[in-house]
Image (cartoon, rainbow over all chains, first blue to last red; front, side):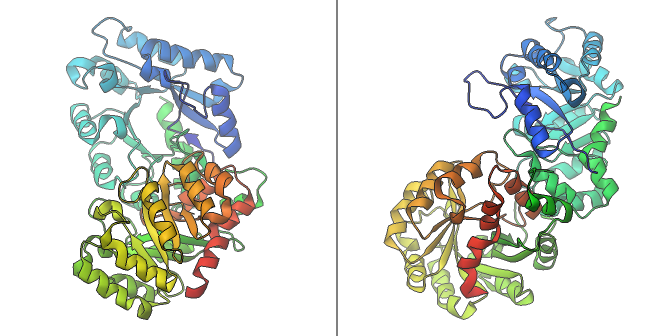
Length: 250
Length: 270
């Protein structure tokens, strides 16, 4: 039995009320049940658009109000630099994340107007590194140059590179996997023929995470690609859910 | 399990292929590429991969025929088909920026059959609208021989977008139009064009997995007008099939898309 833990999913209405298949948590869970996904990490459109405070409150309130959600939804926390005093201290953020069972962090430095440098975010990232809390680095938002620079500045960061782009990203992701032992990537746009098996053969299966990119993408597409990749059953289990479960245990 | 209560999805899930539902991949490529590392760029490894999904035929155009047209021509594609005649067919890559090469290739298409099944236009990359003069000889040629042409098509493109295609389709009525990528993101327009013309098919490369796209097109033009494709080696056969099975369409629709429609088009070449 292959259990899937989705490492890349978002939901919620944005400010222009664009149609979305996942306006609320109810639709997220219905879609998980439809295709057979056990768990997911999740961030809310309002974490990006309205910011860390209300966006994170919306997702936590919905999880608390939705039966069965706590066991299946791992919310992402959203942070900005703490030096302005608008957010709690790094230790308090960690405490709140643990209370809410939030295992990952989403950042939007471009949209939230801050810089990915130690003087801005170093205190928070130090706490995340010490506590093995992964931070998403979406290639579609940050760009690869900023991802490379971030990893040079924070080489021990637990990072999940997401949204790698449909034009095969191996020339960009392989050097990062080789250089940074705590860096992972998710599969929502990792569509190239035979690429999963090829990467497993090159660097092992331990740092590949099943991600769907839902709701933009259907969850089942990469599920079938992982299920029938030319790799061992143990490697499939790690990619489908084992690696993310291990990563979130800390 | 992707699609509940579907014997087809269950079998694909468990085995990776279905004997009674072969796959015809109508949009592939081959060869290394300047911008992408491919794990399986050449014929032997590609054929090994497509066999896992019971792909009966992969119809491709070689990257080199499209990017290095006047240096390489169609030889690598022809050689690959001769090496794997049970699995491979090719489209003659047309680049009208090199008219002499184009005319020379067109003259050989008949002798390359049945390995060669038609032409491939990549107008967005070659930067010439398909209704412009440089493409006319190739269109007239395909029209005279009743050949399929696989067009790269893209949303709002001034080279192969919906308005351009609507301009040429009535002028060359004997061509089988295969609209690659379904005008990516203009799903409704794609469906309407395929519904309007009997000889127009939509080809799904990069579409399966994109939520809602397939349902929109199937609802407008029916699954009888839709062909499966992956851009192999750009995208994995199982990713595409997984996306197809995830869409909220019927198993009968999936059969049409994966093999029935292609079997009709390819009948003269198999």
